[in-house]
Amino acid sequence: MAFGTADKSKPYVPLAGLVGDGWSKDGKATATCYYGTVLLIIQFIVKNLYSKHARGKDRIKTFSQSQTIASGKVITNYFCEDYGTLMYRAGEGFAGVSTLRISTVDGFSLHETRLRLRQEYWTKYRVYWFTGVQGVEENFEAQG
Image (cartoon, rainbow, N blue to C red; front, side, top):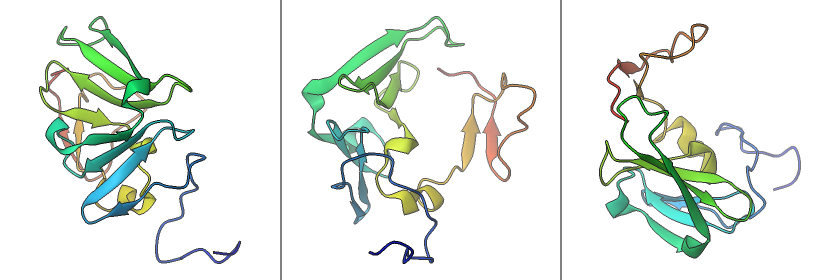
């Protein structure tokens, strides 16, 4: 597609990474670290059962801690060892589920459709100047 001929029927979001092999189709999408070392294939319900590493699983490093989690349960960050892109998080309070970092999802039109925010969690202690996301349900429980 030539410069200035973008598809105006979809929201414009510039590419977040340098690798162009990400995709979204048939209820699945990819999530890629900035330099393309790690590539995840996800379904839109991001239970661990439904996502897999297409490449780079051996390049994922973790950092776990419970100090900043209200419940005191451990949360683990999974990131690309090469460039530090945070790919997803998993917490003891939500067994079998990973919280994907939306900025890594390659199908940018998904941000306005299937991945659009519908519920806000952990809103009990948000900063005073942010009043929340309009039109979504709030959940004040600290589950960590």
